[in-house]
Length: 154
Image (cartoon, rainbow, N blue to C red; front, side, top):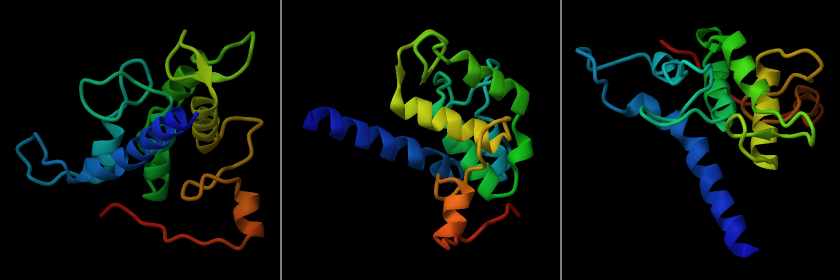
């Protein structure tokens, strides 16, 4: 259905750009500037999952969006990896397969892909390494001779 496809594309675009917008939101602390990596890592909730902005629920898709941004910026270690891994694995449907946005919700391809991609960035056993810029296996990026600029936090 065209409507469902358009909604999915809007959701992808929103989720994809949220971590990139976070560094430019004025800091609510006394400091007018705040390390963008710190701002992204603060999206980790007590459940171990990540959300896109304050007061929102955690969602498996942010495992990819936040981790890929932090990985690209050289700050993947700023996330509590065991807690995030437990959150993602807790969103699995162990009977039918797949991963949902949150535990006990319905699984879908979108969250399954980004959950697996997030687990790959975390170095989860049995998953091929994924490139944080292209969202493709590193072997594919290498074979296609793709290159992306890597950034670092100041």
